[in-house]
Length: 201
Image (cartoon, rainbow, N blue to C red):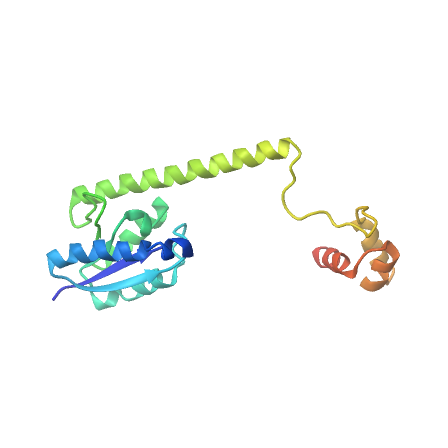
């Protein structure tokens, strides 16, 4: 019987609880049942698809020396989210003589020329959509900043609410004072002083 690898992935634990991976497996089993493949499933739970650093995904690629004929997924976005990752992985599969099929994306079958072309087109649209989301997020952040919303670490303050003078901290340190002594001098806890010293080390 011909060996086939299947890959399923859920981005979050909530998706796992809602049965995303099980639905993917069922779709793949229905496909392989018609083809007569011997199926081995690689499953990542609560792993983002923004890159290929996923334990089961990596294990699957390292197992290609077992000569599966094909890698099967239920949908292309379970496999890769960026066009560069997609094409890089497909090239690696091709170099190892392994085909690729996405069950719920009609025409995605790299064993055919048309399937390979359509896969690249769909991958480009998936990356375009992700870039659009990132652009909207960046625009929203910039708009919030223009209205005075601050991002990042909160400013370090003394017990009476005034901001800690980082330059003063370093001056006292150069005079040989310990973090505890500096904190006492500036009337604040030792924790922010230690952070400032670490950041300026």
